[in-house]
Image (cartoon, rainbow, N blue to C red; front, top):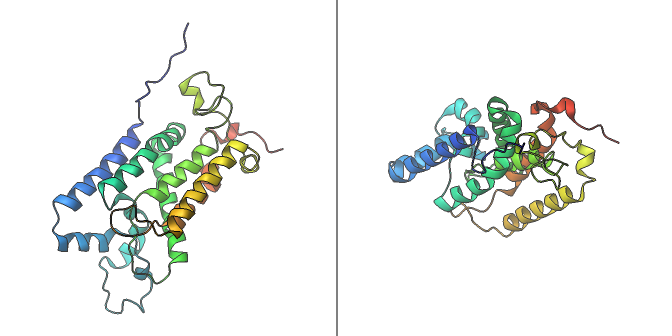
Length: 245
């Protein structure tokens, strides 16, 4: 009997919902809000380092107060500067986010998305303290899903492995321990290329968001490192992880 396989376009519902929320926010921001309201919206929900330095904002120039200091660690991920920015993030989010969502399930994946987005914002804050430029986009959280997928996707029987029996089992193979990440040449090649692309685009100040802002590559790295290091805390299959040798 032939093994049953999932349809190629069977995208997890949580991924569809998140992408739909990105699109909805962008539609409202671009076509409903006035220029003034859009600026207010960004000031309320984008991640802006000066929000955390009262000496730079003596009159409370940014709205939201203490609450915005908390929620913007995540809400910035739902805002995109252009359709190109949104499209590029969606292209990366579909394969890597879907792989991790199939393994984690909806609740764990949403928490993983929140944590990696917040880690990206924190990394940006630590490297851009006092700057007034806003960070927007889901790239840090998407980088976290890329790192998470690295922990199992290249494994034998995994979704990117050479030996793969069926789609359902491919997303639940034992994950690589952290030391194994450093020993797998395919994972290391992916890591080196990914880091290189981020550093090149970031240091060259090439705008991709459509908002004339350079790539916030430190936020990407923050999300990626969090996804790589914290993967096991969210992984329901952690008990099946191969022991380090």
